[in-house]
Image (cartoon, rainbow, N blue to C red; front, side, top):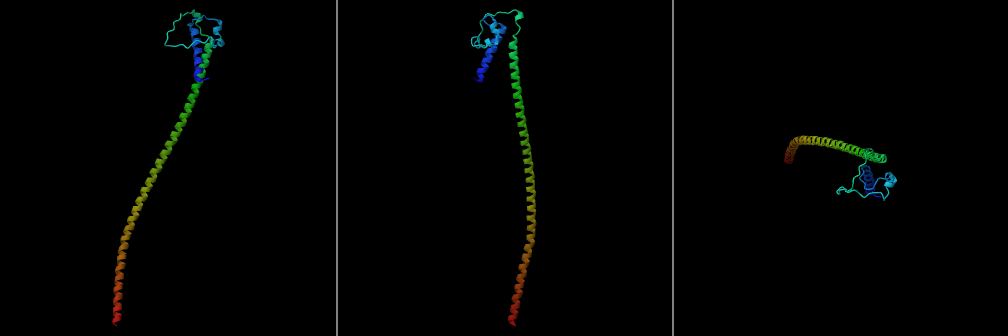
Length: 176
């Protein structure tokens, strides 16, 4: 049976019991109508009550001592109320657990994100410091190379002088 069909049967049964309690039925009350097994039979089940239609029945008022609710109806209502209450409690527990799980995941995500950002910032800071050190070393090397250029120029000048000296010595030895 479908869930909708079950709720329709329960609603019909409940509507019939309420109508019997208030006294809005067209049939006179019998001892069989108060029996729960007979109330659920197809012959006794009333058609659905449409709220848009006006019920044109003669209301039979019971004396005030007969307005007491049927104990079986009250028990059934209490059972249904407890069932609904336990279902709501179970849904709330499930929702609470799901929300707690979502909160834990969100917290873990935020911690991971924060740790990643901090780590990235630390790595960027270290990279910037390393870049500055590299630039400083390059400038030191450039200054050192300036000195090396001077030394290289001096070596060239010395070689030229040595070559001149050698050429004069060779010219002097050829003259003698």
